[in-house]
Length: 332
Image (cartoon, rainbow, N blue to C red; front, side, top):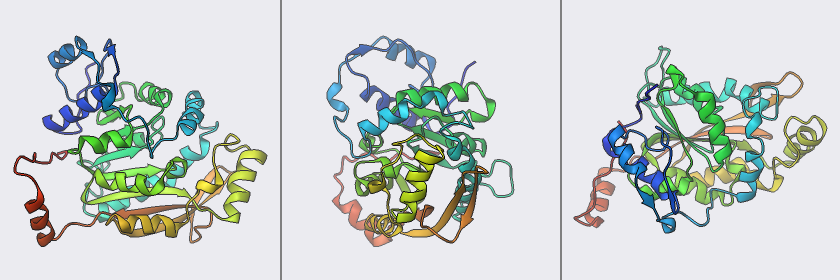
């Protein structure tokens, strides 16, 4: 069945396609799909298929948004991502909180279409660290055009298989890319960036937030959910969850990488993306159920909005740009 990319216009499709080309080193392309070359016509894909690509230097050799050790860890779990009673069951039930939180915050910011079944129609979302698409899929079912990226090829393969040819997921695509790759393209901007249960696995959280902000449109929303670095989180999030109740596999989390809300807020402010909302989340492993709480001692989710430059700031920026600078492309 032919799948048509509904993410964006022709120029953005080319940029996303070039993003995939960056990742291919000294090998012939033998297969192609809408995920490999989103938005490209059949004849263009055939032309791509006949090319041998040698541009290894265009791919980043290191990443502050990706830990090789963390990637291997989650790649081993690829077979169980969609097992709602397996290692990822807490992520599945977390959707009962994070999906409506993201939807309602975006609607409040003026995005989407309230009081409709496709409330996020017209909203372009990048999910960083999408895994097998546990969060990407429900966001796409709400009408959003979603691009999911992840460093684990195994997890992405599970995501593509689960998506299949579902008619409600025509606007969902997955890219085997790093966040650095999206930033490097420079011309792809999103209405919303989501990094849920990801930032505690990266090497440099400040640089990670900076890159998320770079691919966000002015006025766009950034959502981050993570775990607080407290004694409470060590006892419940590490000892109990991993070694006693086995909610997740032992070694899934590193307590030292958990972030205090103040640390996240400070990093956001430094990037001109002030926090507008924070909410604590509480997980009951016995009932496998999440609920909202006023406490952020364990899990929490934040919503930040990128500052819209003033007219004077725009004028100053325009004066510093070279005359040959290309016009920015944004998804439509």
